[in-house]
Length: 323
Image (cartoon, rainbow, N blue to C red; front, side, top):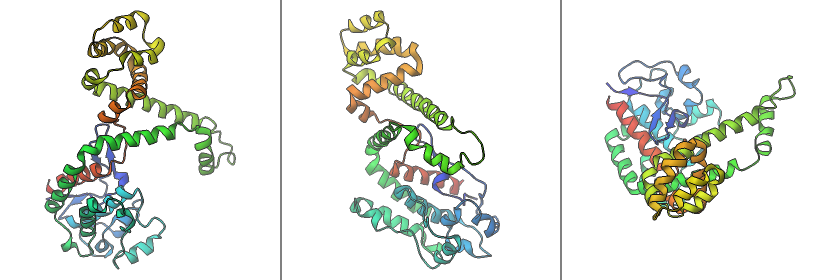
């Protein structure tokens, strides 16, 4: 008796701060032997239609495990491309073309790293087979995903770091230039008399708080490694400025090793200063020891680490189908 999710799509796959994958929205889930709900109910569920297998468009269809396998194939394609399948197609066109065998394009996706991703391409094609009986079993899929994950897992921290760099560059843009026009256009500001003048500023403040939290979490999580590996301690302390009292600065300076200096920095200013000081420490560390930050991996709340999410998403699917 497995659980069928029946609504696998990127917006229902969440990443925690520790990169644990969580599946959300079980509104359409059912046991594999239960009866189907109406096609209208499923098709009306926020674009899920584009992740549905062709047999699900039949009036008398009864869902089976192959439903989620098909959706998983489309989900993986979406994860790697960052695109919605058939994004410009009307619903009636999708309902007509998918049963005829049309699928999202793969050629452009695999122009680069073709040899490394050939197994992934094969798996995707098998998952979205038109005939349910030809789709792979969960056991076969997990073998492919585990193999790919074992090959690429050492690159995860670097991938997360690259994402963080891109997010930092986006956040450095003035919010007035990047956000207000789209907000005004989307909300119709000025046409209905509603004052939204502070909305962009509020978003910026909330985003800033999250950024401080993530940096502080990085400093806490990597305490042992940072104490062991940070060498430019006094340069970092100088960057902190008034956040480190003169007495504390002098006490850190007289320590004979960088290991001892970092221990004092953690037990003193970083402990008493809270998240703001830890976030400032992170920024200084990134400036003076960028390679160390890169090696440790900057863990951000949401990030598209494709192979990792691909593998972890399928692990969650396996648990559901075998439970």
